[in-house]
Image (cartoon, rainbow, N blue to C red):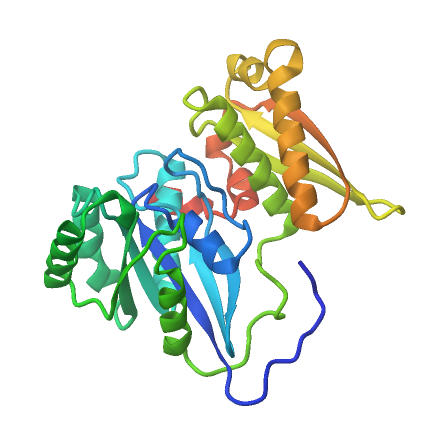
Length: 312
């Protein structure tokens, strides 16, 4: 990431926001990372891992596409769930273009039905494209039938068949998005790939490693915050992060036998943060029990959500 100003090319430039929406685990974060060409969004096998609207910036010719990877749309049960769903629809309403991502092998699910019902009301006046993801999982006739059925339910501007993981069809989607964006100056320097603070990206990386390591043991009951970030004279950075859990038993799970789990998570996270920043990092993790973090406005602010949205 860089703050160096870069001059746009001569001639008209385009820039705008593209919101990726869909059910949890539809592949939105994978598609965002593929479009941007770098890992800016948390990707795991678990659903509902993206909590905030994470923006990634991709260049396509003279166009700058600012992708908003929203939390998955699902039926909310708790304050955190409601804040995540509100963030997703907020991202769609603020965008110039919306891309609805669905899974080819799951098709028109109850969740997709709910999203289609809300699209007209919540995204009025927006250009909406359909991207059918994970196309390698079904045969061509089933894909065509699904595309036809979806387009009878909603007048999509375009339909794309893609595999976000393998990259199939992604270039076509990116080129179309670039051409559809309004003319205007770029919103970010050319070499900037995300508008999240690096403190938050570093915390997201650690949370991803915890999610991958712990699987079902602590699904959504932990959060990670970067408490301190110290730039050192040798060019490295010292990063102190705190992992909040809601029970003493959870603290033991995160730390693991003789500290093995926490050590492994720290090593994996440090390596990825170093790769992202392109320099050496000294990462220190601390686990704290905070029984009510799911009801604390400050915790929501740290992960980029609006606490008040949870009241809805």
